[in-house]
Image (cartoon, rainbow over all chains, first blue to last red; front, side, top):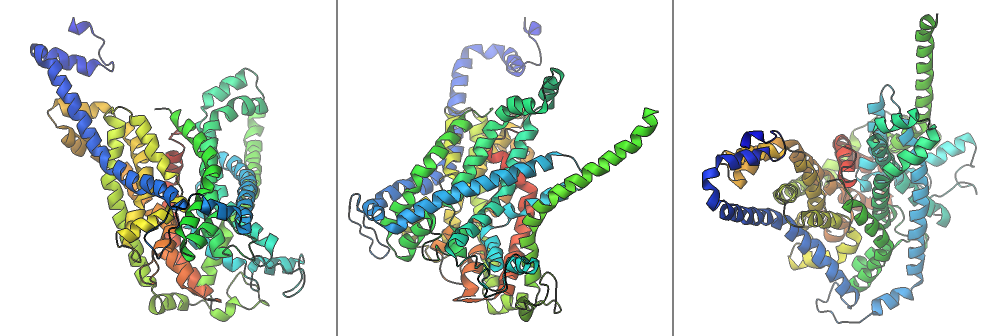
Length: 329
Length: 288
């Protein structure tokens, strides 16, 4: 009877084990039971340190930030009073808050448009095979892998009001005048240019990421499927529209959302380039939260402003969760 | 006749295709690499060479110098920042390994009820941005008495390395064939010793990857370092360079660029090698 079992199936090993321990049958249920409780105990024990760490230092602080947002907590005074929605109301009545909110949204949208265009272009190029591709790929992704505060400094130097290398080149080509003339752009000093300059750095840093995510999507489409479609007479665009796009959509969404979370919550680019200036031209929510929460020491108000990012982030996180749940296990 | 002609036309076609591709790549390469080239050359330029607008700035107009690096090591805290960075990253890597590897194993292999949801839950915390957590965490850091010391960062950085590396290890452990472990169990290995003796050695590449990410992700932080550590000699490099090397309105561009590159470039190169793993990690390992 045992010999008639198909060998090599997933249950072959356990079947063989069962056959061997046939004599121990009567005890086997209890044995199995204690084995599985031991396995569970062992599993939760292994899981506990990571879960506790994350719970205590992400979960609890998140709840704590909700508490801070409805209190008048200050850096100096440890005892906080409950003030209801005062902090939110104060933010609501602050012009800077609305400017920061608007800039955050503009920043996100404009940067996303440029990142998608540049990322798609780069992904299509990297999809081809050519000599030196590995090197090219390695060089092109450096902006993403360089620590962000480090690369922002390079841009700050390139955006220098007087010794900007960008301006030097533009001036030599004749697109702008010489230093001091009307047409000499002061990248970080003129309101509209400053926001654009900050967006530029974000795009520069993240377009390789968009490209690599897209590329990962493209290469995950099995060539057999495409070949089959070709045999059936599908044109390139039909294949792209009906096969590639739906297949890579989950990856695209995740990459897109990941980038959205990063872009919305990043403070380093704006903080290091302009600190929100000139005036409030480049003020964004993360920088405002930092300035009010840490520099001005008003923890409660800072927390309230930071939490205003949640409604912006929430749709992104929700979509991400749905996508991860469908992950192939 | 066709067979005689086709190798040449094929070759020509290939050359033309390559030329087109290179032409297409050039703008991307230029955009990506120029700022780094500009840092590199600035780091080795003499001070007056930076400010002569009459010359072509893309190359040295005065002989290159190492003075900027000298200044960095002898007149600033740069040496301590490097040591801080390495020590912080080493601690973070250690904490991450001790927590994320067992957790990843448990979630991937032990068929715990709700493992999938717990795994996703842990990974989602990676996406809770620092900007929402840094104010409450500043209280936590103060309560622990760690404010103004780099130990604060050792405590805080695992909040993003643990979720990411747990997720990574979970994916990794799933690729280790179950039979190996079962065979060891049948041979009388306990659960723990099967993990240590059989599964871990096979998963060494995954463990190494986790260490690399603990390092590189720690280096990407700016906010926590800025918010929690203010004494000049306690900062890690990514925070120290932009906050301490700029005094008021005076920018020592040569030294700043030297400082940024000396640490930034090795990190970038290291990260480069593991970028595909990172992308795989966040996209849920869809594209093998």
